[in-house]
Image (tube, rainbow, N blue to C red; front, side):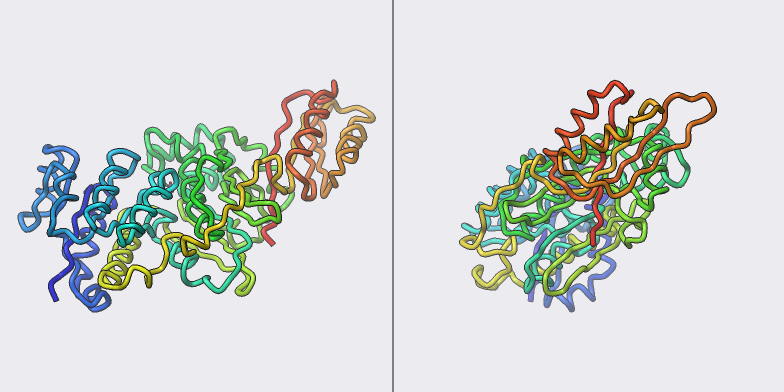
Length: 439
Ligand code: HSE
């Protein structure tokens, strides 16, 4: 059978990785897919870049400077979009779908923001949009959630799904350094981009979490409802205190089913240092899924990089090739659930999220301070799990008070915090971090 014809838009890190993996493993890939998978054309966003791509891929594959031409080319069966960002990626993907082509993309921002529109267009046209590379790079987490765990009612997912921030947190903990110092080092080593905002402020992780949440719970992608908080305000002091109490701080994406809705949140989180996921260091990614039949499963691997992400992109290409001639009704639905079985369960506002807390208060070291603070917590029905007070140095008149609470509702914690912050003996803004046992 003739090889399936692929049009590749973008030959950056992941595009070049995809090209090389397809070339290197072509015999095995053909054996698995049932026919060859051939890159028939590469497109760049400018003629100049197309010229550079041509030098990379050699003369056998035409490189053009107009992606529109690629999505309109009747000889192309599958369009692989690897340019990232919203536009022109969104228009190109929609045009490829309208032209009856399958699409493979690793574009998490595009799917987290416009997934509903894109999946609906694909469904109407009877084509596949595959996106394994969009979440956690080389870890086959989409396949696991959508197919491997399909017997289960998923309860929650917690993931380290941004390698840049995990690298920074590992370095901060390991070397006792402040965020700013480590960020500069990460940029020098190429772990962080020159504009690291999306990574360090949690946006990239929230894109990925939004997609996983939709698949796990059968709800539409709703990035606008996600709580997004990064690590730029995190202080080395809190990493140190957390460690003394038996916890590590990780930037987690957490989505959890509750009776009244779905939690969808990215923020620095204390987790017990004995958990496997707490020991995921450097730029690695890991996702824990809690589901009713299987229990806890953990997925670990490289969440970024040329060949790890290409591994996911090529897996999608093989899937699409196998399904190319299948009846669209017999394919795995984009978000795991059939369109008429999707749910409108609301995403909960943060005030309704249930979690435990780590609080650090800088307080005057005098009689009655701790009791006033614990009284406020008791008045708000917030139960204390542990308290740590730094021993003051000789003559020092203030100290750090660390409190770990049991689970409560965030809105209630915020009310208690406002009261505590108003005490004259609380001398600085209170640090509030969330804590999850992941049990
Ligand atoms: N910048 C991401 C990370 C990889 O640091 O994990 C691509 O999403």
